[in-house]
Length: 132
Image (tube, rainbow, N blue to C red):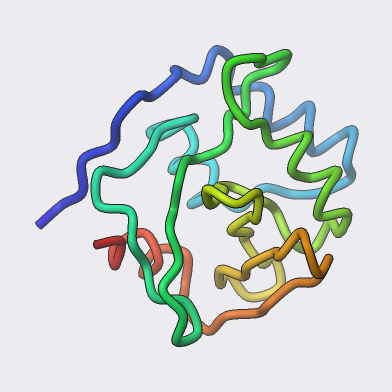
């Protein structure tokens, strides 16, 4: 069963990835770009996901639009995470972020209260597929 994505805000300009790459000195993986283009600022209807044995909630995909004021944004999340090795792409309802680990294409979890990254062993593709 495929998930239904709700409340999408269209990505206004795909060149935003080039701008972020240049300013932040990072490189976006193609699978992350494709996902954001398809699901920018959207919420999955089925939003539960087990991450390292803990049930987590995927609240919404971050908005990658420049100057977005109606959604949580990639840049504000990137400022919170503060580590270019982990690209935030979604948040939970509690202000934590799901991040793409550039080193190996897995998903990790940034806990804002503890200011730490919990590494995972699930690929980005599999993470999106197992939302329930």
